[in-house]
Image (tube, rainbow, N blue to C red; front, side, top):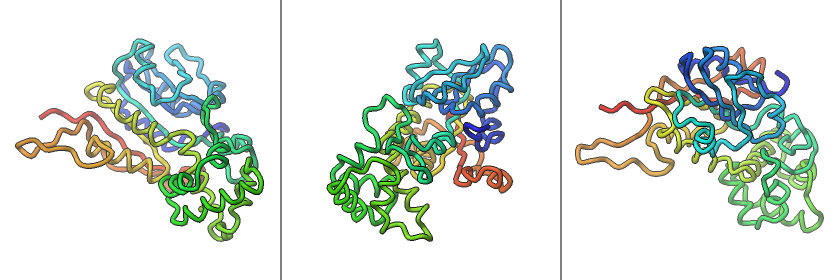
Length: 301
């Protein structure tokens, strides 16, 4: 697929334990690779809903009466499924992060390899773009997002440099940002550091971690009794949230224990963490950081 090579395709769909007449949701439709695999396993009474807020993904809509594409952010999954007459589902797949298509479209601003407008919005209707983040955020705010979302130890210095450089001239393209931060990009680790900087800005622009939290919190009420959640993440910030929610039902702290020492945790993991095999990484290098976690509703004792 030119648009996006689906990562951990067989593993993530196997994990859903698909029932032929079940109702499933692919919340990151993209190029439709995972959705097509789900449809291939559904019977004529099965249903699949796809979510994608990127207008480019709408061009990949699947011509199948069992499929409905919802052009919205998956943070609103329950609301829009109810609008379509669905209250419970048998499985939900999330392939987080940025699609290959978004990385390869230079003008979208996601890529460190191509010059383009500093945009980074997954939804073009969103108010704030990377240009606004770089051009108007305070030094403290920039340092905070670079540290929290990019995990950069020298976030304060990078933020200070951005503020100094933007006073000389506006920073409006990917390569202008790259040029402004050249002293922090030694050849040996240039790509790694740039990727961390771009990741931090992108997460801020798209509220990615907040979206993920809102999405996960809806799963216990959305999934049917034996329903499955299959989540592919690409960096530690996402993966930690997914892992923690499955283990505790929370994002901070620990669940409270009752008088018998038991905790009320809504979900439980299914199987072990899965990562791509060497053969898949060789074919699709972008899959190298992918991690798949699977969960279901916790059985009542």
